[in-house]
Each structure stands twice: as structure tokens, then as C-alpha cells.
Amino acid sequence: MIALEVGGTYIKGCALGPDGVPRDRERWFTRPERGPDAVLESVLACAATLAERCRATAVGIVVPGTVDAGQAVYATALGWHGTPVRDWAAEHLDLPVAVGHDGRTGGLAEAREGAGRDCRDFLFVSMGDGIAASVVRNGLAVSEAQRGADMLGHTPVRLGGDSCHCGGSGCLETVASAAAVARRYGRATGWRGISAREVYHRADAGDPAALAVCGEAVDALADVLATAVGRYAPERLVIGGEPAEAGAERLAPLGEALAGRLTGAAVPELRPARFGDLTGCMGAALLARDLLGAGTGWWPGPDPHIERAEKIRAHRS
Ligand SMILES: [Zn+2]
Image (cartoon, rainbow, N blue to C red; front, side):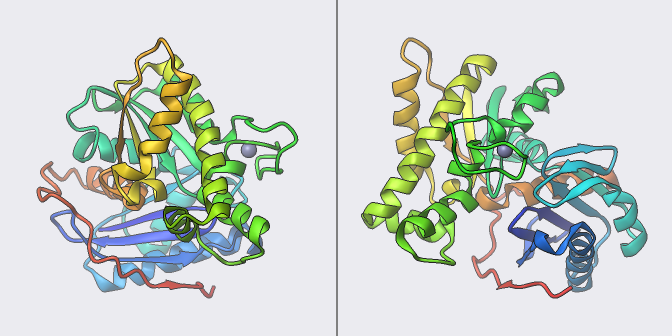
């Protein structure tokens, strides 16, 4: 089974065994500046590369933006508008393909097999190149709440802030996404090509510029999440993506910032996503599994992550 998460910076891919455990993972640069067709060709090439390495029976692909009936209706980060991802991928790969929304399917993965499994009601927040959320109740994404949650990353938080690929400016994504953290640190220090992960590590080591950038990201996220908590009243917040990779400790400043904003209201429990940076891929894998009508019982062990030996390479289209 192949699972792909297509983001504005990386296409993340996993080849999973029949037990749902990732056997192989890799990521490629998306380079959306090449245009929407080139991005789609890269996605198909990445899926084909992984399919060669395992006996793939189905493919799950998750994308940002608005997704409907296998189409990327509106994914500005990729330049896709009305792109029939499912049909083109199925034809190219000659395999059944399911396509879903990254945040929503990530929430599904955490609800079924992850940090939301023992919780009836939680908000999953996916912190990657983009920021999206998923309102999960009784193991199902709440569709009427979903549109607002999908757009969480485009909530304006800074008047006159950086311009955003959505056409607005000062959106949460321009301050707190992984891409924004890397970009803002680069702007403050002159260091270029540093990943958000490295900025978080530098903040842990006490680098003042990294601390400032990460602090601004936490403040902006807490502003938006305080409103979301008021609206959806979740029992728990499950945070996926880069900030979750380092575990609960990395989330402590966010918990404190939220508590400061939610005076008089219950502060939901904060937990890192079980699947960390792989939550979107695990959601894609679940879509593929559902497509095959396979049973439950995946990922019985404590942690499905394989060795963190990702090979990062620029994808040549
Ligand atoms: Zn925006």
C-alpha cells in the first residue's frame, strides 16, 4: 500500500506492509513554482517509485485545500484548481486510488489508531507547510464544522503581515507553519535553507532568534486555537506535524499560552499526534485501506515509525 501527503514544500511518501506498518518512507521537494502539471507529474512519479518497492495494492493521497470526490478543488499551495487527482493517478498507476484532505484524514488516523483513540471529542491540528484542523466526534470528522477547521491556517492573525498564498496577508500560516518558521528565522538571521526542525532544535538550545520566531508562532497559534476551543469545545487538542515530533515537552509553551487566553474556560488536554510528522501519510494509508475494505487492527505496537532515515532529495520531473 502506498500513502502520499502532498504539501507545498514536500511530497511525503510511505510504502506500508499488509499490517499497516511503514516499511519505507521518503520525501521529495514539491517545488510548486514549476507549475501545477509538473507537481502532479511528480506525485505520480513518487507513487510509482514507492509502488516498485512494495507489492502495492492501493494508493492513498492526501492534499491541502478543498477536496471533493477525488478532485483537488482548490489547493493554492500546489497551484491546483479542479485537478482530478484520483482519476489521473488511478489511470497512471493502474491501481485503486483514494484522495482526501490532509488535515481531515490525519484526524481520522489519530481517532482510529492514535492520540484520539480513547477520546470522544477532539480537535486535530496539523502543523506542516500549511495548518489545518479536523473536528472529530465519536471517531468521525464533523462535516458541518469542517470548512472552518480546514481554513484554520488562513485565519488572519497579524495586521499587515506577510502575504499568504491564499491571497490574504498575516494569516496564521504566515507566522506559525513549518515553512513560515524557517522563512522568518532566515529573515531574522540571514541563515538560508534551514528547516523548521532545525529552528526548533536551535530554540531548544537557547538561540535567541530561534526562540523569538518560535515564540511568535506559539502566540499566533494560541490566539487562533483559543477561538477554536471556544467554538468546538473539544476535550483534547491533538497536534500533528513538526512540533509534535519532539513529544509533549515541545507543546508545553502552547499549553501555557492557551491557559493564559482561556481564563474561565476549561483548557483542553494537549497531546502530540501519535504519528507526528507522518499523520497525513497515515491518514492516506487509512483511505487506501478503506478502499480495499480491509479490516481493522493496524499498528498494534507502541510506535509505527520506522527508522528516521529519510532520504531527502530534489525530485527531478
Ligand atoms: Zn492565507
